Structures are given as C-alpha cells and as structure tokens.
Image 1 (cartoon, rainbow over the protein chains, first blue to last red):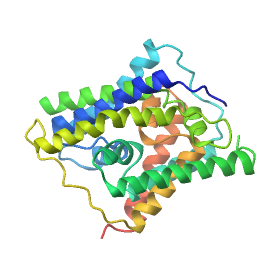
Image 2: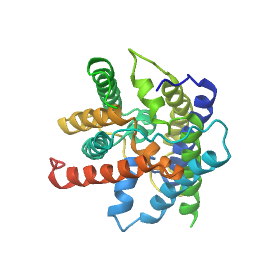
Image 3: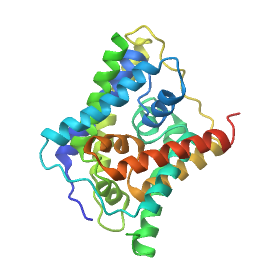
Image 4: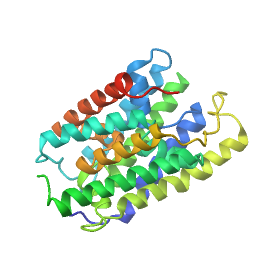
Length: 143
Length: 139
C-alpha cells in the first residue's frame, strides 16, 4: 500500500530516537540495540532489570502515541501469515548472527563510527531493497 | 534504581519516536525499501535525524570518557569484518524486506494489539534461538 512522505514527523520521531540512544549511552554506557537487549533480557540474569525496563517502556512509549497521537493508522491485518513467520525467523536469526539490527548497528553503531556497523547497515539496506524489488516487481507481490 | 529510571526514560523516548515517525507502520518501511516503486523516503529522514543527535552525543561522551553512572563506555568497536556479520545482516535484510518489521517497531506494535506483531515477535525469538544453538559460534 502506498504511503506519503512525512518529513516533519520523521524528523521529530527520529530526533527522539537519537535522544533515546544517547540517553542510554550517557546514563548507563550501554548501546540501545533492540535485538541484543531483547536476547539479553530473556537469557541473562545479571543486569536484566534495566533491559526489561527499557523494552517495556518502549512499548509504553509507542502506546502513548497510538492512544493520544494524530493520524495513527490502524495496524496491518492482511499480511500472509506464512510470510510473516519466515520474515520473523530471518530477522531473529540474522540479527543474532550479525550482532545487531537497525537500532544497534544503524543508530548506535554508526554514532560510534564502527566500520562493522557501516558494513552491516549497507548489507541489510541493500538486501532489504533487493527483496522488495524481487517480491513486488519481479514476482508481483505476495499478498 | 537510578539505572532503571534512566533506562525507562530512554525506552519511553525510543518507543514514542518510533511511533511518531511512522516507522511502526510496516508499509512505510517497505515503501522506503521500494526504490523502484512507491518510494517513501521517510525512513532516511528518521535515521538522519537520529544520527544528527547520536553522532555528536556519542562523540561528547567519548571525550568525557565515562557514562554518568560511572560505568565505563564500551570498548571501541572492532574493525574486523567477518562472514557472520555479513551473512547475518544480509539475512536480517531479507526478512526486513519481506514483512517490513525490524525488532524495535515489531515490539512497539505490540502496544497496538497487532496480532501480526505478536506472531512476528514469536518467530523472531525462535529465529534468534535457532542462531544461538545451531548457528556458527563466535570465534
């Protein structure tokens, strides 16, 4: 489904994400990488508390906007479930193997001037774009 | 307690930012990746705005040397590229391009009671465990 370019909300939301990552780094010296935080929150016993707090607060922060925000679109419902499961498995497997996702490599890794993160971002952006190209323009959609 | 409070504040800002920016909408993400079709550059603006804060913020903290809790900052990132990193981020990109969810927005969508997001997060956790047990080891 086409969506409109929304530069103002993108700027505001993006700045908040950058502020959030900087806050966690400043306060705790930790990287706000969601895939890593999720794994560690579920698997470690030491230092679990702040990770769980961060993740639950992330959901609460989004909930605030979903309830009080403007122009909040309804959640997508018609996506084919087998593809959703395949996508989830790949994202879980890939982020564990590659040690990070859009937040850890994209927002924090690049801010740390990490060459590994730069390569990771280039790789997942290129593979994501290639996947969309194949699914939408060569196969003609999966829905 | 202070650490919990700081982490909660950071998480709240993060989730709010994801939702305000529209990145919780998987169609917006897929359209960003659809450069040959219905391209929506919003995600690039989100990343640019986030980096405009985090790059100088992180640089300032590096010069300062320590976090405010007194905890050391993480070691400088390694520059070594390996097959794990390349394969992992490629597989992540493919999964991202299929459904339009990366881990943060998928979690944020739980707040909207999205059944899709619940299923996606369960599959994500399963994929992560698969890589933990069956994937190549860290050297």
